[in-house]
Image (cartoon, rainbow, N blue to C red; front, side):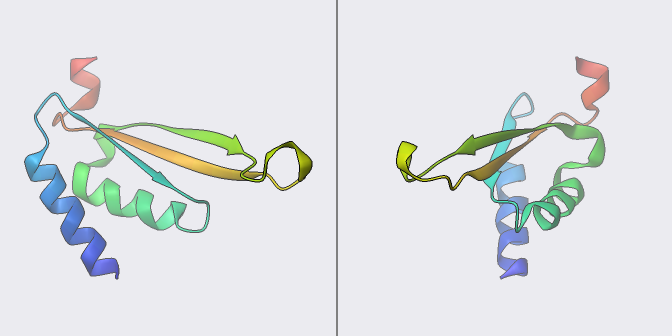
Length: 83
């Protein structure tokens, strides 16, 4: 499974335009793994931010709250030089 995801990220990076941004949504269980994977594919310097969204998929009646993480990277070679 890990190799499959890595191959998809490599392909996506090649298809992404130079001014493009990659935003990937993931839960907290796989957050660390995906961050390391994307650091390798897009480069640590191209990391933008991680946005955390809290949601309650069962509505107001339940107290269960889950988090979704959106990890964003730019396709630019040196992120800090272009912003």
